Length: 223
Length: 388
Image (tube, rainbow over all chains, first blue to last red; front, side, top):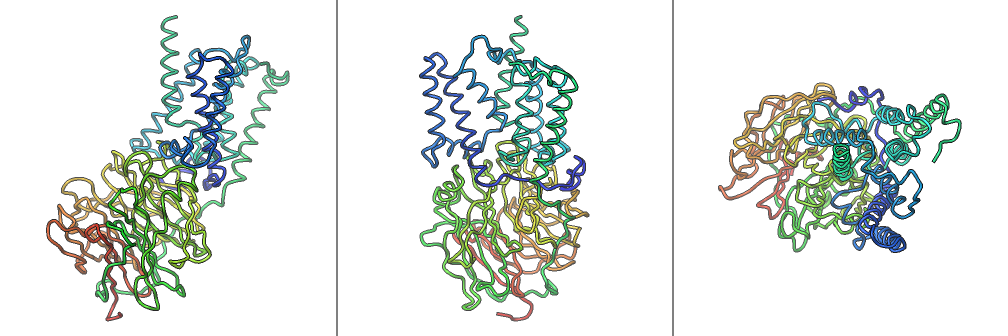
């Protein structure tokens, strides 16, 4: 079994983890679930008039921000802890599409048309992290998530598509900016737990990536 | 949405990417604490032949009023000069996993040489309000004193589900004093140990103290596969990292025994039928762990607890019967692998239970506590000679 220091050594840095402070964690948990629930509510109510959709999303977000057991995040936190930063950013992106639609905007490209490669990467990453949780891997992948070297490596990797694809990339969809932005926000806030993997992907987002990937593959097969 | 012109050139994008990388790394490194030095175990300042320890006192710790059940005690030696020699923590309520289970505590008063009336120190509703998310059930407290003398308490707190959905909640003393009446604890965080909603990590046994004032907290993963992990903390109780101690999927509740500052053995409860106490060992202060053959001691899927009094002086409290928890014994060893019986702790009939032992060294004595029929916490004190 590899250990505390050699795992960090393997990743190129003998540094201790930095975990989020208490109030930042509490804020992140409430804000995260507020975004996810507002997006979920707006998506379920997509047939309603825009004003009603906006009111519903706002009401759900405000309800979630109430402290204590009257708030859904009290119970969601009990069961699922906090959503990842990526899930928050995806929720923001979808809220933008659902509540402030711009007909001519390239942002309106359907989610299902998103390139499968990043959805596939998220799905594979989730299986690896799940296997690690059950000690099925010979390495300790979750522990790597405390390493600054991994943060730097993943940030470089996540910027590659933007570097290679150039000027059109900001318009084509979230796959090119979700990961770098989540990693940057993680470096700044340590949310949600201080472990990079928790910031990048959570189990619910992983399950959603399965559905989106299957839709993408099905649409390509139909085309 | 179009990119600014300078980002449309490959060189501009390359420079921007480098800037983002540098800024990310700076933000990250700025927040990280000092790198930990190699871990070295600290032994209690005792020079005693464990084989000479004799029972000098015994009894049951007072329960909180109205508590029908008690389980999973943990002992904490208090510093010299403190009003108490020892603190004990356990969970109590109507039954294990009952909604009203809280973490109870008592202290052994130096002046009266008696346990003080117990009080609850952790309430799940209060902790939930402070964390801003709910805790369904509480259990398995493990206590530690940091370099500043603050009490840290690690408790198992379940989410949606039973013990397999548990997380380790780290609480820290917020009050000025840690006498029983004054002790107040606030939640620090749920320890980040797993990607799977951070569930199914539990604590049970006391930490291994380190020479740098920090400690190694043994824990285990429980849902489906059961495997042990070691968690390192610095002298103020800041989390420094985790390491898996074995991939064998039936080992839980490790207890850490140091043979030298860098050679440690972990003994564990064995979840297999007809199991024996399992062992893993590190030679380099927790950097690498190797599986060892199971010990000769049988283990009825029950918790064990041990400690090293000095190099070559190790004690272990364990259930000796192969299929029940009715026989609880204390054994000693010079290498943590080969054990000789030292004292019977509690022997009962087939339907009786003496289980979940805890051990601590305080004021020249070895203290042992254990669950007595799931109704209360029993204790025994051992010393060389006839010290009362």
